[in-house]
Image (cartoon, rainbow, N blue to C red):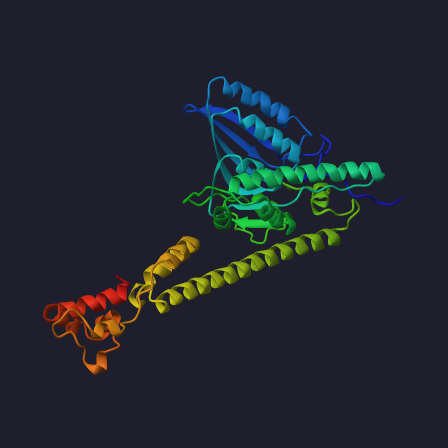
Length: 385
C-alpha cells in the first residue's frame, strides 16, 4: 500500500489519547486578565478555541485589559485565528512572547502590541497542506491553503507596514526566522524587554525540532521530573512534511536541511541588507558631491547634507535641486560703482569660497576697505542680481 503524507494546516489534529502540552490559563489579577497560551495550538482536546472562549467570556464580564503570554510553535491556523478573535473582546491587549512564536502563533503577535525578550525567536511561513486524495479533494486542499496564506499576508502587512508583495517575498523564502532584533526591525514586534527571558530545556527542544538557526542555552531545567518531549514523532513528521513512515534518519536529515536553509536565508538577508546599505551610501555621496560641484553649497556644508540625505534622500534631493547655483566670480567684479574695486591679478578669478578657504583675513579687510568689491563678490557667489 502506497504511503501518504498526513493532512495538516500549520499543524495537525492528533487523537485525544496522545499527550499534548497545550496549556490555556486565564485568571484575574490586579484588575487585569492574565492569559497564557503555551504549546501547540490544535483542537484535539478541551484546550481549543471553544473552551478558550468560555474562559475569556467570564473575564470579559469584569475586565477590559488583558496581558497575554505566548510560547508556541504554532499549530492549527484556524484555531489560532479563532482564539485571536476571542481576545478582541478586550479593549486593550498586550502580548508577551517567551522563547518562541512560530507559524500560526504569529497571528497573536501581529494583532496586538507585542513585547519580546532578547532571546525570543519568531518564525513565519506559508500554511502547509499534505495528504492524498482525488483531484477534487486536492483542489479543495489547495484552495484552503491559499486562503490561509492570504490571511497571513493581510495581517502581516497591516502589522509591519510592508506591502503585500514584500510579505509574499518573505513567505516565498520558506521558514523565515527572526531574532528579537530582526523582528523589531522588520516591524513584526513592538518592543524588546530589557531583562533576559527564561528559556527551558523544552523550549530548546522545540526550537531544534522546528529547525531554528540559532539555539539558545536553557536557563531553567526541570527537576525531579523526566523532560517531556514537546513535539512527538507523529507531529514532527507532519511538521517536516515527510511521509508517515519516515525513518529516524530521514527525520534528522529533514531537520538538518531545514536549519541549513534557515541559516542560508539569514545570510542572504544580511548580504542583501549590506548591498542595499552600500548602494544607498553611494547614492547619497553622489548627490552631495554634485551639490558641491554645482556650487549649491560648500564642501564644509557637505556633511550636513549627507546626514539629511541619509535620513530622507528624496526630500533632500528635491531641496538641493531647487537651490540656486552660486556662480564663480565674473568680469562684473572688474567694474563697480566708483572707487578702487579692482582685484590683484593673482586673485581676479577668486570666488567668495576661495577667500574664505584661502585668505579669510583678506576678505575681512576687503569688507572694511573695499565694501563695494566685497558686495560684488558676495552677489556673484550667491547669485544675487
